[in-house]
Length: 72
Image 1 (spheres, one colour):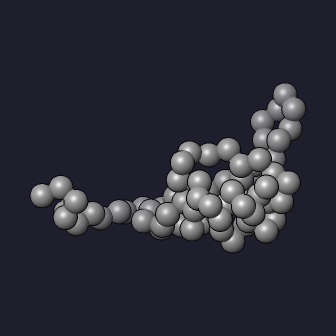
Image 2 (cartoon, one colour):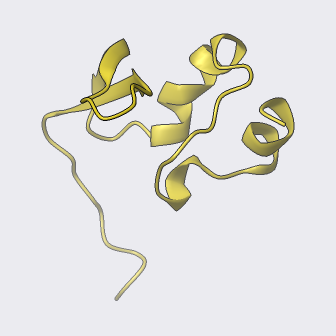
Image 3 (spheres, one colour):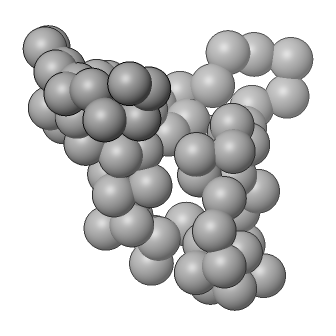
């Protein structure tokens, strides 16, 4: 039965926010670890106040109305 199966996650996720540097690799500005079952946006929300006037480039896991409104 798809959708009713129990899902288990093991390990951790690395979350990294880097600053733009023309023609160079970005320097990490924020680094964090969360359990593997933590949603990506949950890890980002505490940083939202520090990311003003910033373009966030990520997959659709980082897109919601709150994130779009705060960073516009």
